[in-house]
Length: 286
Ligand SMILES: [Zn+2]
Image (cartoon, rainbow, N blue to C red; front, side, top):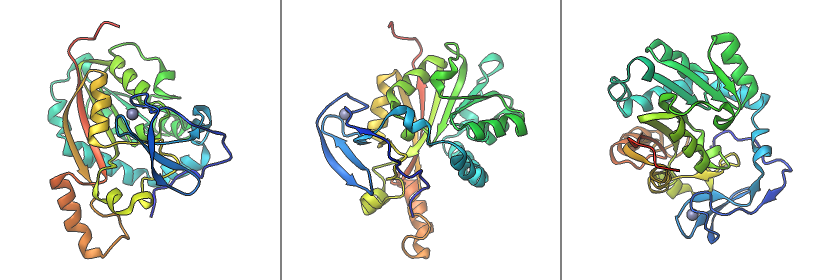
């Protein structure tokens, strides 16, 4: 079964250049119901093309999306903490003290991870475009969440020791601008942690356009190679990549799920990946 997605509405679509390299040549990759993914000839990025305009995309995340986020928040939280454990989050951030012990969750939904990070001694903040989800976190959990995109929040340069985003980057019209902004708000040697579907995993290879992450809400689908390329472009060095998700629930015989999940994690062919990257020591002149 595919991941929840808002159905493509009668948004006007337009053809775009590759969001990673700006290339104009692409090949058809996956034809889905009402939308399609292409692969850039230049850099191999898989992206939705044509696609809706940016403002139309943000409008998708309203009440209905909040209901989905709220119903699944405990499960998503568990997956996020497991992902962070996979990349040894606690030991990687142990050296962050005082003013540098700051954590930003971009696409924080109802804010469960921010609350956890606060318990771990971080000054933790979030950014969320889905207004009702942000409001829930602010009002019910008393969290510091800004409504809007990361760019809207206009944080000062070098504000955070860690920037985290889980299942966000694949929804963005301009992931390049997002990573650029992450680099700007991170301190020197700060960590950027990104969780996103892995289009080179076993499941996308098996299921193609029927893969659970080939949904209308996903504008880009990365592999280690294309995400690594985007991060390096903005001065990041990838420190670790872990994957999980060998076989989705309900696909294939049940006895196969656990061993495949274990193998996916061991050998890196899972269909979800978490990447931890460190920002270069000094900013390049710009
Ligand atoms: Zn490209």
